[in-house]
Length: 528
Image (cartoon, rainbow, N blue to C red; front, side, top):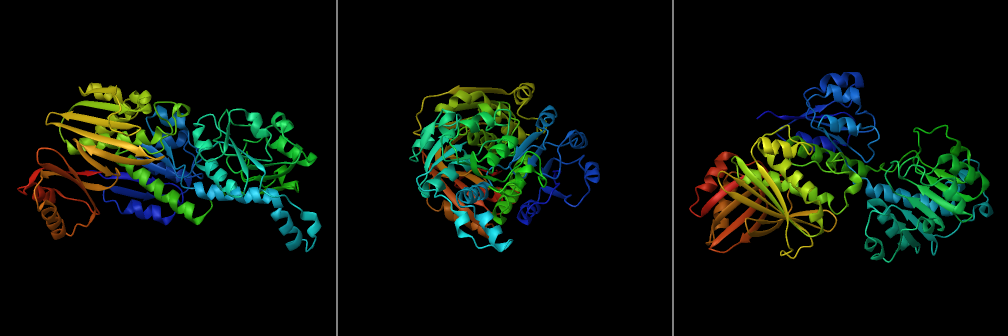
């Protein structure tokens, strides 16, 4: 089988490279030090590209990358990725939105504290000007002050939790979440933006789009109380910078903490001339820990995309990003993995793919089905399939794909079940998501399980008699295969099933040995 080629265009933490080089079916191209004009010459046969802010995924890039299936932006911002151009070419654009969450949260807290106590100015006054003047630097306390949080996602919610620990009263504005996400934390949820403008401190944590650019400008600042303090560690331009400058200069805004600017680098920005502002050069992700996490997630996502298993955090989906509730996103990824998983357990010409959905997510059944079809067809080496053409590719192959919302009989709030029927037999995979994004396989052909859809695994159906585990372990030990996890499911009619997670690849010889055991009904090997 031809290796998949992943090109790394910009510098990432070494841990990311280590993960890529460890995969035998992946060919890694390190183009970090290559000039950008030279980079274009070697993109032609690459399957996936990992980029950062130094590489523009523009028309020139996309025209050169004629075989590209996906691009992974190692970080949150995708301002330098032409998503529309990617979509036209059937290229999936992805980012890594959560790896720098804690880093951004803690930087926001630093700016909140600086807004309250002017630490940076006091530091410069003493250290640079050598002036000891305690009276000049009276601040205020965070305790019992009201903090307005615009955007209550991964970062905004964590900032709120930490600020609440300081004794602040939190008011959150986010029209795209359930109010319970806020109120369950003992905080106030509002749909009236004026409630945010009435707060003592305001911090913003939204993406940058048409709806949020200049979200805070002259009109909004005029409604704020005198002496308000503003923080922006999200994206440049969410606060109108001229309005921010004018109102800092007039004293309407007592202090601001700014990590991001509309145009960067911002070495000559007018805001730098003002005293009552703390600025940092876009340091939201700049911790050693977050850089390592970003590299690891980018590498893992690139491998999944190259293999066609899934496209985590895909940005150009068949449904509009603003129409996707946060609770649905992990189910989209899970269903695609389930399709890929089912096709590996039932290797034959696919006849039908059926998706049953329980719970509120059934509203998005058609989109979920699309992801399941993509996953199943990827295993058949259908390299041209993507979210846009999945339905048409399935029809061309004579595969019937259907979706049905079913009553909740599982006890889970939401559950998805993918039934893949081939010329050989049928396989049913059940799955759900715990918490915000903990994906789980909960059943295979009626056998109950609870394991993550990730890694190398042997699925072994057997007669439910003593000694089976020992027989399996003996074969794997003889081949020096380490067992990372061993999950059992028992069913009726004296049958059982095992999901065995292993650390290394399993070859056909080992599968044949397992299949020859008298207790074995069938055995398959799958990689997720």
